[in-house]
Length: 84
Image (cartoon, rainbow, N blue to C red; front, side, top):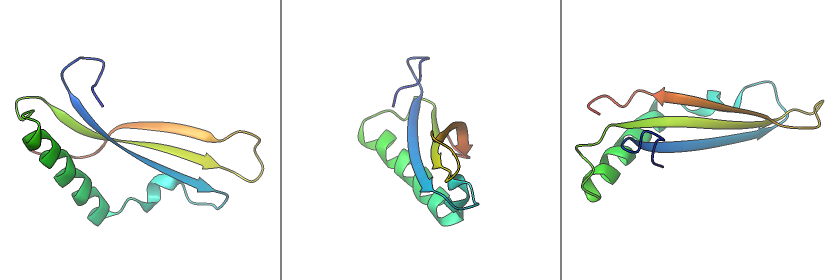
């Protein structure tokens, strides 16, 4: 994605869960975070976007058993992408 600032590159990880007691974002461990940062770096290199800031956001969709609608949350800069 392109941030509304018109310059920043945003990689978005979307996680969903039906029921349960753990938030969907809890399933993004250190290994997954490292893969997301590497993916962002590779995309920026491939497309010549190294001069643009980048970040990794997480969007979660949680369908709780007792609710009619999902809880949707957007975590901006959820994964530290050092060297942005």
